[in-house]
Image (cartoon, rainbow, N blue to C red; front, side, top):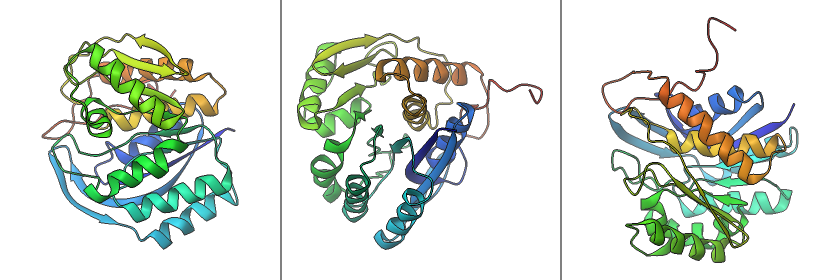
Length: 263
């Protein structure tokens, strides 16, 4: 069985973070492992508290994983501090980890900052260059590039800037009112628009976590980067179309929508 490691924060309400990642990886028929960077107190209405693990404890988690069940792909999500980013970067380099998908989680949907300001530069210098794919949304791409993005041409410019910095592939997600959920994929200077339909569903908690984990699952299974992205978008669309409605705010997706009646 192929394996995927998620390095991210915990969402106690189950809609985002490692909980969403594990559900997504399992739904793809792969074995999921997790290294927790932070505990969060959150639900569909917002983020009400964050408690980081210590760098030493994160390192122990990663040691236990890499020395026993080596991951075929790694998804990196919420990492709030510079010290934790340093630990992750050092471990991934040491272990020669491959198929690294980085979702640069900076601000929650409810507006809570999830990445410390002093950690942004460390993320840019230490972690982003290691990633095989970086998957920012529009606001995150604006922070990472320092450029305002208001149209598809701006997305292309931002992708070029990030591509030069990373040396890897970039997927800028266009779901923030720029277009109808069309994403821009840049790989080795080649730009590909991956068109998607906007699903009329206000329950979008954890969509970024879900997409990046699905892409990592595709890479672990042996698909190309482009095919992994296309498969992941199709999976995410299906989870949104399921129409599950839980919670008082922006609810979670049904990651197991393909499983019905115990089958």
